[in-house]
Image (cartoon, rainbow, N blue to C red; front, side, top):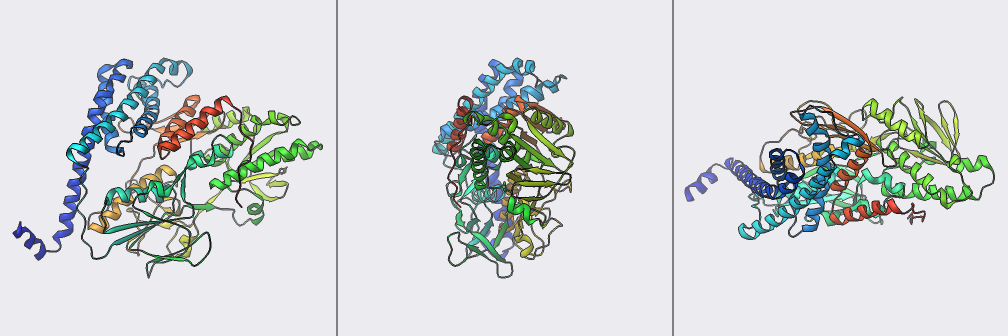
Length: 589
């Protein structure tokens, strides 16, 4: 041992490699341990699949494989039995939809079973998958707690020696920033030689896939927001707006929302995860006359405004002015615009019973989109399905048209004028302007140019990801879309690369194959496109009630925290039996 220490001292260059090898071995042992726990739990939970699946050997193999995967990916907190049960059962809903409805029939040479008869035929398997998920979650939790008591907690990688703590500062508290911070905490464990700071305008992570349901009064606003301080255990959270970044002196300035002097935060590594802002293409009239739709406060304001318009219309006697009050124009036919149009249409028509002087014919929700098909992120057939479904419920479309201007009470298109008191803008976004202000190299949109490792060239220890970065897939060399599923994977990859950079390891290029996309179009209807992995490697499309059911199951499982999951589930159950609430939420100006 003394000879080894002397050898390391005489060859300092070996020390980073020794730390890297130790860290890799620790990581390997950690995942082997988790996989063993998950496999054992999957074997026990396979009872539920064997009882409901026609092919018992395949059911056991699936149970073991999914158990091992669940054990490696999900790391339960000590004694969190309720959270584990709920999370695994929610994930099982999505697995049932993929396996029983799509994959297993495809392997048998049959078409997917997403029609009414097909879903009815595999519904008994649904109960088996739910039971399997519940047993898997509880058993994995019990095994993990037992192994921790007997063998001790998971081994952490060897701590790097440093005379001064390495400071990692993350700008932005959205999906990209939050995921990066969570994974940095996981990668470095309790290592005191590395500190983390996250600077965010808000004190909570907003689960944006459910934002339209807040505007449509299906969910309470606070139920889709997770406090940053609750989720991040080692990261110092600074509530403030980033006003300046000095890459030469390596210091960030953040302004407090309550005023006072800017706070200066030094850094060794800096992560830009500032997201995007609405792009009005220089039209100040549209900016001043429209509602934005990016934050929780935006959704609250839209909902309150729609209720105000119904109150005004209920006492208005002039039919033309009444129709103007009840006309809602949404600019943009992407996911945000379509989901908001569907939610507001359901909300507006659902509260008509509370306003006796209003008729369904007076309500007009119009979606304006510059292309001939909505939802360009999905296939044309799904976009057309979404349009027909929404038109059947009263949504009007202006396709191939643009919103050119606006004034109070009117929205000007390139072919006509619409009398409306409500305009919501979802037709354009741009990367946070701070990327240009910092002097970084940006693309034509204003997104920071990063290499395949998510690093910004020319600035050591400066990284970017998410909507504010022009990320290119390291394997396919194709640009990565600025979506939440990519931001989550970029955050995980970046945390590993920052750790490798600090410990002298090898950086890994970012690569991720999209899992597909889902969009709710209102009234228990959705459109979805899933990309099946190897060896099938094909895209499958489905729609209607099954897609809506899967949308809720998948996103409920991804919502952080058991408490939020339960609250959202309760909101959805209440919505089935009671009408939409028209009490206006407090709006803090």
